[in-house]
Length: 247
Image (cartoon, rainbow, N blue to C red; front, top):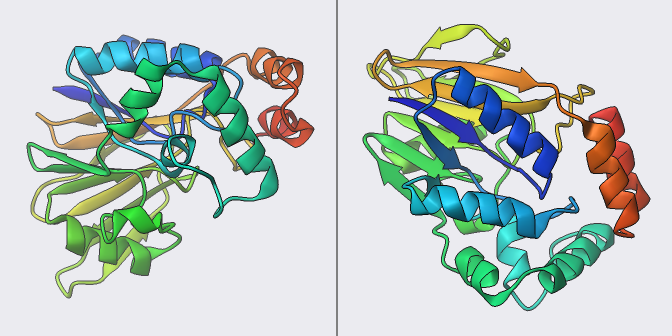
């Protein structure tokens, strides 16, 4: 099984389609969506239609903080611009799409894998995994061979050392990394729809369960179209600027 891991799509249809096409070319047979399907971008309904179809076919989907905010009464923990996009997104979605977001789990487990948007340690707190200490807490709470998450928007990889603490690796896109089960691993797969490392290319990762390997990928896409849609929708200008700068 080759599993494509996609996080933080953020209603960016162009980036999502590019990543799914790339994953198919790499031999992916299954897909997991690691939260934040919506927020920031201009295509929430189109993205959810695609994700819901994949979920019907068996894809794993977990809830992110932006997904949760859209189906909650407010987005008090977000900045004003993000809150405005949440309100706008809510108005773009039909009842079945809102029901889908509302029904998403915070955590899913399958075949030794823990799927979660943020940290598996108190996932509803939306803790950012900034370093190995945060990663160790998530690994400890997950009790799984592999933990796959998003939320941070940049790609990272950690494994648990025999002493219990975590060690960090900087993944290189396109390089196959062995992730054997003799130690637990945690991967932050990066953002499909809003990368934030100065590179406009979308992020995702591909897990080969049969070989126990993980490959991080960067996929160029037409960010100019996505940015133009943000502006046409009347969303905050800086969100379009971010897509153009990859930050």
